[in-house]
Amino acid sequence: MSTSDVRILFFTGKGGVGKTTLAAATAVRLTAPARRVLVVSTDPAHSLSDAFGVPLSSDPSEVADSGLYAAHVDARGLVDDAWQDLRGHLRDVLAGVGVDELDAEELTLLPGVDELLALGEVARLAGTGRWDVVVVDCGPTAETLRLLALPEAVGGYLERIFGRDSMRGLVTSLVSGAGWGARPAAADAIGRLAEHLGGLRELLADHTVTGVRLVLTPERVVVAESRRTLAALALRGIQVDRIIANRVVPRAGIRRGPAATWLRTRRDEQDAVLAELRAAIPAGLAVDVVEHRAAEPVGITALAALADELYGGRDPLADVGRTAPSLLQVRPLDGGGYLLKVAVPLTEQSEVDLVRVGDDLAVTVDGTRRVVALPSVLRSCVVMDAEADVDGLAVRFDAPMATGAVAT
Image (cartoon, rainbow, N blue to C red):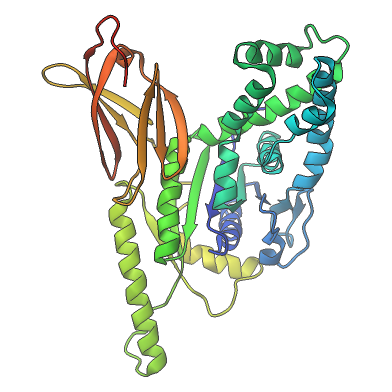
């Protein structure tokens, strides 16, 4: 599967902030320069059809002779087609090595597999060559973040079944069929799951192909969750290239009366929240503002007008491919030692935990944890201290450890 010639825009955010409408409006704008565009929803709510005012299915179909195609991913159908088959093969394998039938059934349960297969289907569509751009309306933030952790979770899941030492060799033999001549279907099913995992991680981490738009409304609770989302995505190697503040109250101007006073007060509150947000995010990450409309934008014409407000004369793809800082950056310190920068956007309220485990560093930010391998130059060094700022963590390493020293 190749996605080198396609661009993918993911829209995510807390439920109810309007990400589906903005994803649809963006897709309409992208279609105008004669691009081949597909907008697809992985959100179980399937409200994309409501935004266009037309019925949609899992098969891409053209929306109102506009040149734009749209579809809903049928996650349940993907589970029935791929995962149920795989579960059956895994039960057979486990039973063959002496695992009790009930335990085998439990071990083949994998929470979140429907979301995993849904984004795997997005990767498949992007790789067909039919589209220049694929716009993805993701599920709410919590489901999206859980999905992005699934590749690592699947590794732990397989370790639980087969053990750390034998997992890689076993999966390789399953995928290739070597040593499993009596179970070629199991090898095929494992291979399909591996393709979904590998394709998804490759797709999300390739900043030259993929952009992520974080949608929020200017309310403190929503903004607080969005800040945590930025950090969690950064830990997964996913770059948010733009933030969209939706449903901002229009300015009341010189009008008077209770309604005008309410509008001015509400807009002042929202402006204050947005100012706090801009001060707390990495430099260079823009925040776009979309005003609240009196009528819900439904259909191609209304969505095109919304896109005009959001983008003006700017190409929605302009930020895709913007250089992103590496998660880990090392530089030598004057007088010896090194400084390791972990590029994760933080706030004063962020709860951060940092633990060294051998040659790995376990980083936890607001409950999201990722274990990353230390750069080779630091593996023989000792962690001295660490501090945090808005741009991430700074960890100071001293000279190489003496023989027999214990890493902290």
